[in-house]
Structure formats: structure tokens, C-alpha cells
Length: 132
Length: 144
Image (cartoon, rainbow over all chains, first blue to last red; front, side, top):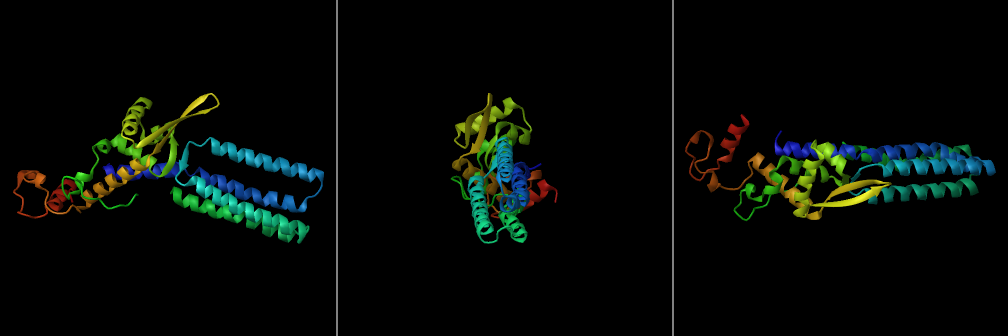
């Protein structure tokens, strides 16, 4: 294998190994389908406890998964910051409207869950492309 | 792969003057290539990607670190030590130039006649005066 081919193969292999972040984002996005409706539609102390446990499990699980990774793509910090920032903004808006305006609306809860998942899904798709 | 045009080196305009001797080693080139698309990678990850032993990788990384192209940092996960490798800005620039030079050589983009190639064509044939000889040489080497 020539030097150029070897270098290109190494770069591709390293990019593929750093594709864990796409899986992280897919799991985070999928969790919105449960967490957002839970936050908007389920009320009471039991709901609060269940929601807290669910969020804690999600955050702890994802954090542990990320901490075990031994390869970090260039610019990961900035990209992660932007994605989490976008998700937080949409999530906050969803809670605001869902708890004050569209109270107990299942339709709104479904739309909000999709909206919260959207930046994470887009991020996951872009990461998958970058890793290949 | 990384893009960039080969620049003229101090010895002339042929792209081979830009090649970095330290990266002529396949293992060192592979290490730098593996680190180029990432912020940092664990020692074990690079070892697995390049398919060398721990001691072989340590030796090559030490050479790259001495040149200022790779930064080595140590961390700890619980009781387990963890070594991270990362390309420095200089290492990244050197790698890009080296790859651009290799690509320029492979594509026959070197400017002008390389005086060092006089009389060195495969088969010992005479070289055309003032002509670019790489194309014939490269075709012969590549069998195409």
C-alpha cells in the first residue's frame, strides 16, 4: 500500500472510531419521545419522582458512555456545546408553552418531543456522515 | 483526505524537497495520519489502528513528541493510567505539507526538471534535455 493510501486509510479508520458521538445523539434524541411527554402530561409527586429518575438515568448513562470513549473528533467540544444549547432552548420553550399555554395537550406534547429531538437527530446524521 | 498544495522546499521546486524525513517511516506517518482527524486519541486506540506493539508505538511517539508534532498527556481513570495522544498545530501543518508533497509527486506535479534525476531513469536510458521526466518514470514504476 502506498504512503498516500496508507495515510488516507488511517484517517478513515480514525474517523470511523470516533463515530460513537452519533450513537450518543441517537439515544439522546430517542429519549425525548418519553421524557418530553412525561414532563408535560404527567403531574404529581409520583410523576416528578419518575421524571427525575428517568432524566438522571439518561444523563448518567450518556455521560458514562462518553467518558469511556478513547477518541475525540476535532471540534467535538464546540459541536456538542451548540447541539446541547439548541436542545436546551427548544426544551425550555416546550416546557414554557406546554405548561402555560397548551396545558395537557397530547398533540402539543408530541410536537414538542419531535422538536426537542430534531437538533439531536440532525447532529447525529451529520456526525455519521463525518465518520464515514 | 487533507488538501493542500505542495510548496517549494529549500532545495528547489520539486515537491520531494518538502517531504519530511521523519514521516518517511510508515509507522510514524500512520500515527500522524490517525491523529489528524481527531482532537485526541488514547494510546491503545492509536496502537490498534496502526497495528503495532505498545513498545513500538512508544518509540515512534517519543520521536514525534521530540519533534514537537505530537503532545502526550497522562490521565487517570480510577486507578488505571490513561495516555492521550494529540497532534500539535505544528504537527498538523507538517502532515498536511507532507501529504500534499506526496500527492504532487504521485500526480507528477513537480515543476521543472529535477537535476538529481539525471541518469537515474529506470533502464538507464538517456533523459530528454530539459524535459519533464517524471511522467515516463512514474508510468514505468506504476506499470501503467
